[in-house]
Image 1 (cartoon, helix red, strand yellow):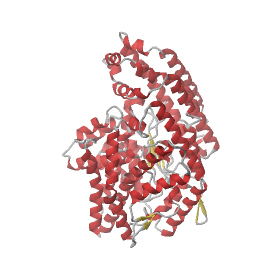
Image 2 (spheres, rainbow, N blue to C red):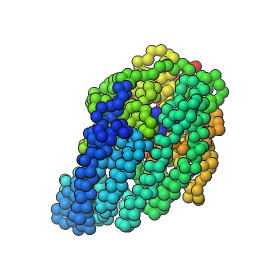
Image 3 (tube, rainbow, N blue to C red):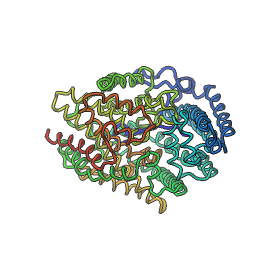
Image 4 (tube, rainbow, N blue to C red):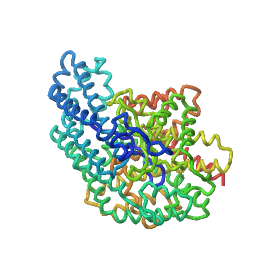
Length: 628
């Protein structure tokens, strides 16, 4: 039983690249999540889940969850093989899965609420206790469900196939077939139970320590004590001295905390190595590939294509950008600096909302109507607050509820793209919810498709409305930077993770050694036009994906390259594309990514597929070079 959080980027400059959880309004949410505290930016209303952390409904649902998990175990444990093989076994098993799914939905509601509240304020002691207590209760309850997937996977293939001829069970075929892919890596039941129970004192505890440490850090910039999000935001400030001061503040605080982050990283890498070894995974990323339902060779082809393209993508673009600043090289803190010719001023929230919804509506009124609910029904939390999780994400919660989006909106053009990105996730999650708690979640191979497509729609709309050559250049350059952060940077992150997890198998890595690996992969990806100054070696420390979702990051590059190809199909499609696209999103986890891409004539297993996506970025850089 797991609570799924849709990830969104994490970048040290950009908007978020992939995700986390969401919260109500910190302390204000303890009693009720009624009125937002700020008239300027929306704060989400979590009352659709629970009215507050002290709500009696939480105690009621936790008690009900405990009882239903025990009752389910009593009714089904040890009976799956026998019952499935009998006449009418398909109906019996379908009823059991339906019951299991209802429990998952209830657990998802509880876990989502606790996670969202905690993301809103991870340093408040009462909220932290609530989050920890609920997480522990969910783990304890779900121990009684562990047998189900394990036992189901031991049922004879022929018996399962016969049973699935019953329509009631046939409905769950995608989930059953997906589940059985895990069969070679299953362990004996009591070992699985031990792994599960110890997760609360193992990787889950280290994840929580990371979150609380990051949220509690303060960075002294020009005499002010700032949290991490506004400090990272200064790396995009127009004033060069502010960017430099922010970078130096990040370096100083991270240096002071390097032992903690090194310990967290080493411990989680070792924890994963133990699990992988027991389960029989050969490569450090194989468990992620299995979870993503993507073949290792497909990912390897993506990574190889992107790394080979570094010189014609990031290296070339940063050389171009340095020239715009009349320099031969840019200091690393200037990598995401606003362009000298970019428009100034803050984009007001209503304007950002209108930009995104207009772009969505131009593609599909249905898509825009779904996205608009996030604004009208208060499914978005936008302000920057002390203790709030950095970055952005859309969390699907559970099919009986609806998604919530977390942002840290500060009025920059990238924030508008982040809004478009997260609403893409949100629309995807709403459409897929009809598949139920077991089949709504989308494999990560397609999890970033709707989000990146939403960004592309918004970008293309803005570009088409821009007549000024300078503004067009700024928009185009901003999009290229975002694509580099999504493709090049995320593959560099993946390369970094592979190196860390591989070397960790031979012993612990010091913070200094981790920094050396970081500098190596960053130097390769950024190229000679970025001058990496002292202090940059510790910027690996705040990337949450390394902690919460090892090897997740390649999903961004996968999604961006896929969307580049998908958008080309859209631009050349006569009619019906929007309908096919929404149908793909609505499929959720019921189909393999290759099957979902067939209606668009796309095949990610074709080596040329990735080159096509990367050529879109290269073509934009060509256009920028031609502008002078």
